[in-house]
Amino acid sequence: MPTTKLLDRVRAQLETMDAAAGFTEKQIVGGTGFLIRGNLVCGEVGGALLVRLGKEGGAFVRFAKAEAGQARTGEAPSVRRMMMGGRESKNWFLVDADLVRTKKPLREWLDRAMEHTATLPDA
Image (cartoon, rainbow, N blue to C red):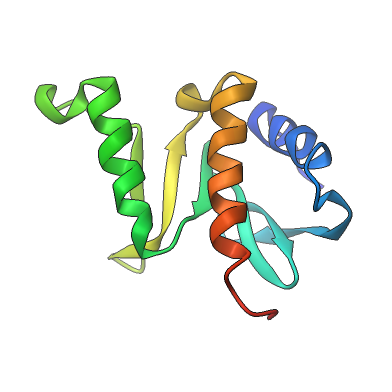
């Protein structure tokens, strides 16, 4: 399997989570993903953390922008909706690696993704 610093950190965090035994690692377009019960939960794409948050995930994006002061300054957002096929995703978000460079924020984003994915039926 490929490896990057972020990907190694995601693997390490997932190993500490309750559902660790149920994760499957798989190559996805542009990176590596982690599935549980057949549902893609998170991954690493283009050097960013990919998380599945559902339609309600937009609230996390707004919060992250406000917390970083990016809503006012016009800086590139550190959390953004994933673009797929030229369209903005309603369920998938990219979190810049700099925002999750320590354990606590990485774990928070992974917990959010796990919480959302737990609501989905097995695939």
